[in-house]
Length: 363
Image (spheres, rainbow, N blue to C red):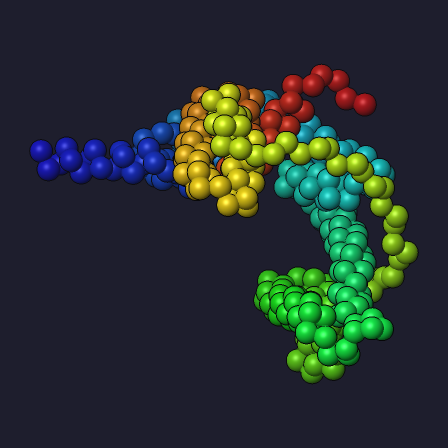
């Protein structure tokens, strides 16, 4: 009985393992062969994982011959096809100025290549462009906002006819001063956080913002100087550009939130809309808001987890398109849940690889 319980526990642990680590564990226990796990990985679009698994099979293994055949006839052709696909995709995205997509494609190609040096260089160039574009855009936006706050600090001056120390103007000015103080504190926290995360240009940006609002601070200047020396070669700081004019969009007329409307949306299964309306109810001080929000959040969490688990089941059955669809539902419901985001991203990558392998003919 004791032995049976131990075996059951082991099987339970094994069944709970996922991905390559789980496969390694099952192979080591002899529960599944390396050849079988290679086939599974291949059919899920994980070509390099399948290749790595096949190469571990030694010459005296009973599966060696068929593993070599599988490697030469299926895995290697698939690897080369995907390598060309992602290399071409990276080039196409680069030519269109889609730096982030190009970086991702080159990274995929590098993973599939046995000589990835050139592809990694392309990936590095795209990463620099991504970082430069992000920095330039955020720098301009942050600078514009900081200058606006500084202007607002000087805006509350009593007009002629009022006393210079008018209490109401003083209170209004104090509100702005407090908001600026919070902005200064937040800028410094960001600067330290990005410094610790080894993101020097972002740390520089927020240290610069801190100094714009609180000039002369030594610790901020020291951090800014240190980050400037930590930047990759070719990165340019403080690239001023004229602000791009924004197009004014007429906002749609809002329907006033009511408990009845929230309940109607819940009944219709429109949970995201219902949550937005319930949040508006809370802003209005409606006493029903908290109870409605709790019910909505509970239902959303349940629906998201259910979709996520259905996605996992579909993935294990190698129904990748269906898995991606379920994981997308989970992310739509809980867009900040990292587990759902990671699964969806992985699923889309595998989906793309499988679709690329299905295509016939090459340019």
